[in-house]
Image (cartoon, rainbow, N blue to C red; front, top):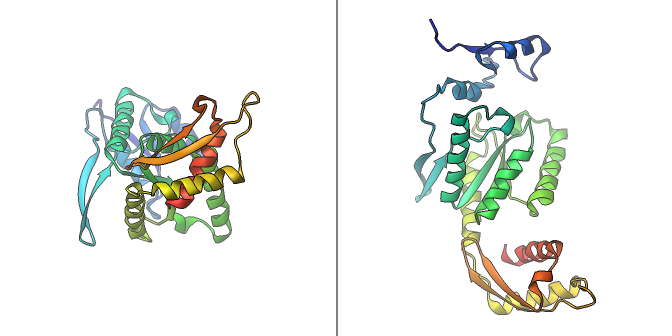
Amino acid sequence: MNKPVILIANKCESHKSENVDYLEFFDFLGPVYISAEHNLGIVDLYDVLAEPGTTRDSVDIVYDHNGELITLIDTAGIRRKANVINDLESRFVEKSLESIKRSHVVVLMLDSLVGIEHQDLSIGEAAIKGGKGIIVVLNKWDLIGKDDRSKLMKFVKQQEVTRLFLEVPTVTISALKGMRCGDVIDKCLEVSESLNKKVSTAKLNKWLINALDRHSHPLVKGKAVKMKYIAQIGTKPPAFSLICNIPESVDESYKRYLINDLRKISS
């Protein structure tokens, strides 16, 4: 009848078992690996149910949080590049990135069973470069054993600092059980407020003197890099202007040192 057929492999409570891998070679949509009993993989099924031509634009939702109106932008989701298989899916990614541009705070939702991956960090980078606040939400936290939780959290933090050069606020939740979901909005509001924060010029320059005393910039061809004055020049995100004698010679790692140290007085 020339109708699309979706293959669903049920009872996949953990990893894909070898006896269903062969399904990937058939010319069907999917396969989608689910566990009906444990309500796993249903979101993947919804994704596959969208046929070509179906609109999956980001949706704006006005939400009243304790009397404060917030606009939540529900994106179509960004899958790993290996799974972006056609032009339609690529457009979904573009629209999701456009949603980041319209936002103040970006929630990077991760699957605790998978952890943080390269594309997650790329999305985080895009948000930070766009001057957005960002928080990490680890979903399915209830499925992680107590012994593994600290290891996972440490791994996520290491990846953040290595790639994003900062430690991002992290909230652990279970969307299915409604566990700590309200904390996500609270943390977003906290981050949003920090984007508007102003630091006095006197406090900034006192910090600069201490930061330089603790760790001075290495000599550049025998010449000292002299950082003389700093002032805040904007918010959303907070922006600062630092006056120095040879700004083009300031080392990138030293910039990161100053930025991360400055966050301590701005938080």
